[in-house]
Image (cartoon, rainbow, N blue to C red):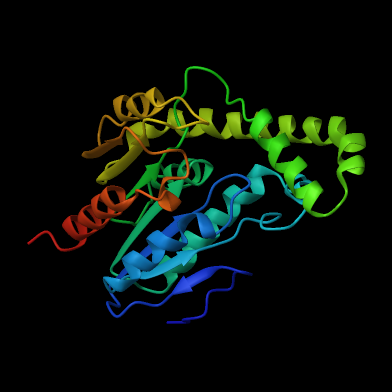
Length: 254
Protein backbone atom coordinates (compact mmCIF):
# COMPACT_ATOMS: atom_id res chain seq x y z
CA UNK A 1 0.00 0.00 0.00
CA UNK A 2 1.05 3.59 -0.68
CA UNK A 3 0.04 5.07 2.65
CA UNK A 4 0.37 8.73 1.66
CA UNK A 5 -2.69 9.96 -0.26
CA UNK A 6 -1.84 12.20 -3.24
CA UNK A 7 -4.34 14.92 -2.32
CA UNK A 8 -3.32 18.43 -1.29
CA UNK A 9 -4.43 19.42 2.23
CA UNK A 10 -6.43 16.23 2.72
CA UNK A 11 -7.18 15.00 6.23
CA UNK A 12 -5.72 11.51 6.43
CA UNK A 13 -5.79 9.40 9.57
CA UNK A 14 -4.33 5.93 9.36
CA UNK A 15 -6.16 3.37 11.47
CA UNK A 16 -5.04 0.32 13.38
CA UNK A 17 -7.57 -1.81 11.51
CA UNK A 18 -6.00 -2.11 8.07
CA UNK A 19 -9.14 -3.73 6.65
CA UNK A 20 -11.54 -0.75 6.80
CA UNK A 21 -11.23 2.71 5.21
CA UNK A 22 -13.77 5.53 5.23
CA UNK A 23 -14.04 8.45 2.82
CA UNK A 24 -15.61 11.62 4.24
CA UNK A 25 -16.58 14.45 1.86
CA UNK A 26 -17.19 18.01 3.04
CA UNK A 27 -19.85 20.52 2.04
CA UNK A 28 -20.04 23.28 -0.58
CA UNK A 29 -18.06 26.27 0.77
CA UNK A 30 -16.91 23.95 3.57
CA UNK A 31 -13.57 22.43 4.51
CA UNK A 32 -12.25 19.21 5.99
CA UNK A 33 -13.10 20.79 9.35
CA UNK A 34 -16.72 19.92 8.52
CA UNK A 35 -15.91 16.28 9.19
CA UNK A 36 -12.79 16.54 11.36
CA UNK A 37 -14.49 15.67 14.66
CA UNK A 38 -16.34 12.70 13.19
CA UNK A 39 -13.17 11.57 11.42
CA UNK A 40 -11.29 11.43 14.69
CA UNK A 41 -14.12 9.59 16.41
CA UNK A 42 -14.05 6.95 13.69
CA UNK A 43 -10.26 6.80 13.68
CA UNK A 44 -10.27 6.09 17.41
CA UNK A 45 -12.26 2.96 16.56
CA UNK A 46 -9.36 1.84 14.39
CA UNK A 47 -10.63 2.91 10.96
CA UNK A 48 -8.52 4.69 8.35
CA UNK A 49 -10.03 8.02 7.32
CA UNK A 50 -9.55 10.11 4.18
CA UNK A 51 -11.22 13.52 3.88
CA UNK A 52 -10.05 15.36 0.75
CA UNK A 53 -10.32 19.12 0.33
CA UNK A 54 -12.24 20.14 -2.77
CA UNK A 55 -10.35 22.59 -4.99
CA UNK A 56 -10.94 26.28 -4.27
CA UNK A 57 -12.11 25.68 -0.70
CA UNK A 58 -10.60 26.73 2.63
CA UNK A 59 -9.30 30.11 1.45
CA UNK A 60 -9.99 33.61 2.81
CA UNK A 61 -11.77 34.65 -0.41
CA UNK A 62 -15.10 33.18 -1.52
CA UNK A 63 -14.18 33.90 -5.14
CA UNK A 64 -11.65 31.07 -5.22
CA UNK A 65 -14.53 28.59 -5.00
CA UNK A 66 -15.89 30.08 -8.21
CA UNK A 67 -12.66 29.18 -10.04
CA UNK A 68 -13.73 25.53 -10.06
CA UNK A 69 -16.68 23.63 -11.44
CA UNK A 70 -18.69 21.19 -9.32
CA UNK A 71 -17.77 18.71 -12.05
CA UNK A 72 -14.17 19.03 -10.89
CA UNK A 73 -15.22 18.37 -7.28
CA UNK A 74 -17.17 15.36 -8.50
CA UNK A 75 -14.05 14.02 -10.18
CA UNK A 76 -11.97 14.73 -7.07
CA UNK A 77 -14.41 12.72 -4.97
CA UNK A 78 -14.10 9.80 -7.36
CA UNK A 79 -10.31 10.08 -7.36
CA UNK A 80 -10.25 9.89 -3.56
CA UNK A 81 -12.52 6.83 -3.61
CA UNK A 82 -10.42 5.20 -6.33
CA UNK A 83 -7.26 5.78 -4.29
CA UNK A 84 -8.75 4.07 -1.24
CA UNK A 85 -9.83 1.12 -3.37
CA UNK A 86 -6.32 0.92 -4.85
CA UNK A 87 -4.92 0.51 -1.34
CA UNK A 88 -6.61 -2.89 -1.15
CA UNK A 89 -8.72 -2.26 1.94
CA UNK A 90 -11.22 -5.07 2.34
CA UNK A 91 -14.05 -2.70 3.24
CA UNK A 92 -14.50 0.87 1.99
CA UNK A 93 -17.33 3.19 3.03
CA UNK A 94 -18.21 6.62 1.61
CA UNK A 95 -20.04 9.40 3.47
CA UNK A 96 -20.61 13.09 2.83
CA UNK A 97 -22.12 16.24 4.31
CA UNK A 98 -24.51 18.27 2.15
CA UNK A 99 -22.90 18.58 -1.31
CA UNK A 100 -20.37 16.02 -0.14
CA UNK A 101 -23.30 13.69 0.44
CA UNK A 102 -24.41 14.21 -3.14
CA UNK A 103 -20.92 13.28 -4.33
CA UNK A 104 -20.86 10.25 -2.01
CA UNK A 105 -24.20 9.07 -3.37
CA UNK A 106 -22.92 9.57 -6.91
CA UNK A 107 -20.06 7.19 -6.14
CA UNK A 108 -22.37 4.61 -4.56
CA UNK A 109 -24.84 4.78 -7.46
CA UNK A 110 -22.29 3.46 -9.93
CA UNK A 111 -22.77 -0.23 -10.76
CA UNK A 112 -19.06 -0.89 -10.18
CA UNK A 113 -19.07 0.53 -6.64
CA UNK A 114 -16.78 -1.72 -4.61
CA UNK A 115 -17.58 -0.29 -1.19
CA UNK A 116 -19.63 -2.10 1.41
CA UNK A 117 -21.84 0.82 2.48
CA UNK A 118 -22.07 4.59 2.80
CA UNK A 119 -24.37 7.46 3.55
CA UNK A 120 -25.21 11.14 3.76
CA UNK A 121 -25.62 13.87 6.34
CA UNK A 122 -28.14 16.61 5.46
CA UNK A 123 -27.63 16.06 1.75
CA UNK A 124 -29.94 17.55 -0.92
CA UNK A 125 -29.80 14.58 -3.28
CA UNK A 126 -33.51 14.43 -4.11
CA UNK A 127 -35.38 17.73 -3.80
CA UNK A 128 -38.72 19.05 -4.99
CA UNK A 129 -37.22 22.39 -6.03
CA UNK A 130 -33.77 23.69 -7.05
CA UNK A 131 -31.38 24.56 -4.26
CA UNK A 132 -31.34 28.20 -3.19
CA UNK A 133 -28.14 28.92 -1.26
CA UNK A 134 -27.43 32.40 -2.54
CA UNK A 135 -28.23 34.17 0.73
CA UNK A 136 -25.87 31.98 2.78
CA UNK A 137 -23.21 32.04 0.05
CA UNK A 138 -23.18 35.82 -0.26
CA UNK A 139 -23.25 36.21 3.52
CA UNK A 140 -20.15 34.05 3.85
CA UNK A 141 -18.46 36.02 1.09
CA UNK A 142 -19.27 39.26 2.88
CA UNK A 143 -17.89 37.98 6.18
CA UNK A 144 -14.66 36.80 4.56
CA UNK A 145 -14.27 40.13 2.75
CA UNK A 146 -14.71 42.01 6.01
CA UNK A 147 -11.99 39.89 7.61
CA UNK A 148 -9.70 40.82 4.69
CA UNK A 149 -10.70 44.49 5.03
CA UNK A 150 -12.07 44.36 1.48
CA UNK A 151 -15.78 44.99 2.07
CA UNK A 152 -15.99 47.75 -0.53
CA UNK A 153 -14.39 45.55 -3.18
CA UNK A 154 -16.77 42.71 -2.36
CA UNK A 155 -19.73 45.04 -2.73
CA UNK A 156 -18.43 46.17 -6.11
CA UNK A 157 -17.90 42.58 -7.27
CA UNK A 158 -21.07 41.16 -5.73
CA UNK A 159 -23.01 40.91 -8.99
CA UNK A 160 -20.25 38.93 -10.67
CA UNK A 161 -19.79 36.74 -7.59
CA UNK A 162 -23.49 35.94 -7.39
CA UNK A 163 -23.59 35.10 -11.10
CA UNK A 164 -20.71 32.67 -10.64
CA UNK A 165 -22.44 31.05 -7.69
CA UNK A 166 -25.70 30.62 -9.61
CA UNK A 167 -23.80 28.98 -12.46
CA UNK A 168 -22.34 26.49 -10.00
CA UNK A 169 -25.82 25.79 -8.66
CA UNK A 170 -26.96 24.93 -12.19
CA UNK A 171 -24.14 22.42 -12.47
CA UNK A 172 -24.99 20.92 -9.09
CA UNK A 173 -28.62 20.58 -10.19
CA UNK A 174 -27.45 18.66 -13.26
CA UNK A 175 -25.41 16.34 -11.04
CA UNK A 176 -28.44 15.84 -8.78
CA UNK A 177 -30.61 14.87 -11.73
CA UNK A 178 -28.05 12.36 -12.94
CA UNK A 179 -27.58 10.83 -9.50
CA UNK A 180 -31.33 10.64 -8.88
CA UNK A 181 -31.78 8.70 -12.12
CA UNK A 182 -29.33 6.06 -10.83
CA UNK A 183 -30.46 5.66 -7.22
CA UNK A 184 -32.01 2.28 -7.95
CA UNK A 185 -28.46 1.02 -8.55
CA UNK A 186 -27.53 1.58 -4.89
CA UNK A 187 -27.68 -1.86 -3.31
CA UNK A 188 -25.40 -1.47 -0.27
CA UNK A 189 -26.56 -0.43 3.23
CA UNK A 190 -27.21 3.32 3.19
CA UNK A 191 -27.10 5.66 6.20
CA UNK A 192 -29.15 8.88 6.24
CA UNK A 193 -28.90 11.60 8.90
CA UNK A 194 -31.21 14.61 8.75
CA UNK A 195 -31.37 17.61 11.06
CA UNK A 196 -34.81 18.93 11.90
CA UNK A 197 -33.48 22.47 12.34
CA UNK A 198 -31.54 22.44 9.06
CA UNK A 199 -31.30 26.05 7.94
CA UNK A 200 -30.14 25.35 4.37
CA UNK A 201 -32.15 22.44 2.99
CA UNK A 202 -35.66 21.08 3.44
CA UNK A 203 -35.58 18.24 6.01
CA UNK A 204 -38.19 16.46 3.90
CA UNK A 205 -35.53 15.93 1.24
CA UNK A 206 -34.10 13.12 3.37
CA UNK A 207 -37.40 11.25 3.13
CA UNK A 208 -37.50 11.84 -0.62
CA UNK A 209 -34.06 10.29 -0.90
CA UNK A 210 -35.13 7.34 1.22
CA UNK A 211 -38.11 6.71 -1.06
CA UNK A 212 -35.84 6.59 -4.12
CA UNK A 213 -33.40 4.08 -2.62
CA UNK A 214 -35.60 1.14 -3.49
CA UNK A 215 -32.85 -1.49 -3.50
CA UNK A 216 -30.86 -0.43 -0.44
CA UNK A 217 -31.28 -1.20 3.24
CA UNK A 218 -31.74 2.21 4.88
CA UNK A 219 -30.54 3.25 8.32
CA UNK A 220 -32.45 6.53 8.83
CA UNK A 221 -31.84 8.95 11.69
CA UNK A 222 -33.68 12.22 12.33
CA UNK A 223 -32.22 14.73 14.78
CA UNK A 224 -34.93 17.34 15.46
CA UNK A 225 -32.77 19.91 17.25
CA UNK A 226 -29.64 19.80 15.11
CA UNK A 227 -28.65 22.22 12.34
CA UNK A 228 -27.11 21.78 8.90
CA UNK A 229 -23.45 21.15 9.68
CA UNK A 230 -24.32 18.38 12.10
CA UNK A 231 -20.81 16.89 12.46
CA UNK A 232 -19.73 20.13 14.18
CA UNK A 233 -22.88 20.78 16.23
CA UNK A 234 -22.38 21.16 19.96
CA UNK A 235 -24.99 18.47 20.62
CA UNK A 236 -23.76 15.88 18.13
CA UNK A 237 -23.23 12.88 20.41
CA UNK A 238 -26.31 10.99 19.21
CA UNK A 239 -25.34 11.64 15.60
CA UNK A 240 -21.75 10.49 16.15
CA UNK A 241 -22.93 7.33 17.88
CA UNK A 242 -25.40 6.50 15.12
CA UNK A 243 -22.63 6.72 12.51
CA UNK A 244 -20.29 4.62 14.65
CA UNK A 245 -23.00 2.00 15.15
CA UNK A 246 -23.74 1.86 11.43
CA UNK A 247 -20.09 1.43 10.48
CA UNK A 248 -19.58 -1.24 13.11
CA UNK A 249 -22.71 -3.12 12.06
CA UNK A 250 -21.67 -3.12 8.41
CA UNK A 251 -18.01 -3.97 8.91
CA UNK A 252 -18.34 -6.35 11.88
CA UNK A 253 -21.87 -7.79 11.63
CA UNK A 254 -21.19 -10.76 13.92
